[in-house]
Image (tube, helix red, strand yellow):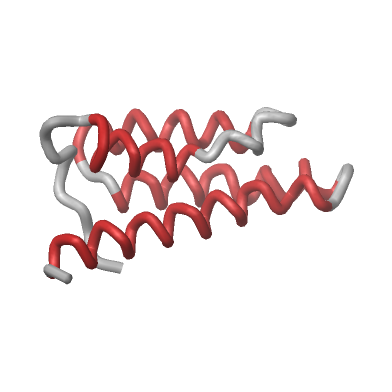
Length: 99
């Protein structure tokens, strides 16, 4: 595989894992909502670090809100952003950092 393709796969796996972390709060009724208060800003910040530029900032805000609002944890925002960046968008969105 090429280095670029390896990076794409690495970010897909990282996005899937971060989405699972966000969804895991559903396993703890009541407590999960309190955990989301901690996870929401962390997830928003991670999104802005993974995807730089205006799209990364917008995705960070959406991720923050999605994690903060009860019941929306099932939306895989990291995976959606990866799909937008590498599948649906004709251009690369911002510079992607190495993890």
